Image 1 (tube, one colour):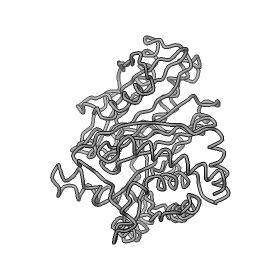
Image 2 (cartoon, one colour):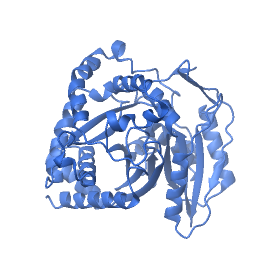
Image 3 (tube, one colour):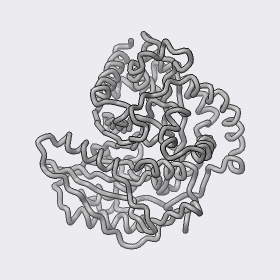
Image 4 (cartoon, helix red, strand yellow):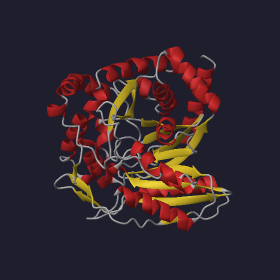
Length: 432
């Protein structure tokens, strides 16, 4: 059956018109690489789930998987003197290479980086069709079947797409009223927010790097979360905001735009009662925090302030009202040329960064009952934000992918942001 595109999907498709809007998941499989065997398992898993021959009817606002056999191609990366650099370069290529939109398209691509005794399997997907949890539920049976857990081959997906839950006027009028009431303060926050730099608004190319936090870092984050009365996501928002603030040295002397604003993605399955049974699709919310980040402010104090903001947002479920903002932005974009659309968000909705945070342990344990393998993610920045942290808690550590727009940040600046983030974490560990 065809499914109606929700507001997030419609907006992502609009972003894809401006620049490819993809995401990448990479999982380590602790077995020797066998291309034929892997291809057979991927084809059986995806084909058996019905996730083939996707038709996107943009005029009618619907999508439909027609099903049928899957015949995937797997790109195998060659040997390289610097395998980490080669891996990041491949992820950059995949993020910047669009999918061919057609009557019956394949929204998935695969690549492999071979190591001694194991390999990394990368899944690239057209982001408008799925969120991170859906992709985990699709990848996990591929991994388990390859390592010999054939009895767990099922994806655990009860349906391909849920019915829409973003028609706020009819389905969630209370949230709509709260969102409308909050709009003046949101508009004020955007007008007070610093605009990220951009040397060429027409160039939306992404670059990618990654790093990991140790098990002791995750323990420190959990301890700081309890001590400060905030969430771990609040801490990451504070760490990123603090790390980005020095890049705009003129901000504190500005007459109006003195704040740093950062967005965060929210998985809304539980809020909407869609977590059981699971589905394949896109079910996300979004909210923004903003703060002046004065020089000398500690990460702990910043996290407390951010925690107050996020607590109010969560209590009122304002992240469920994100479709209202998406619809308004798409309407506004109609009045801009193609060139103006690429710079619309930076001027009207100025975010310096965004966070997508996923605890892989909870999803993997629910389906498999065991510890997940090494896993990390990358997400296109799109036109809305010049930088995205893709944070994945896996096992006893945290893997962080950093996607950034090349015309807003230099590689050296991203390295400095990473170091300031780690320095801030060390201060949290020290209780400072």
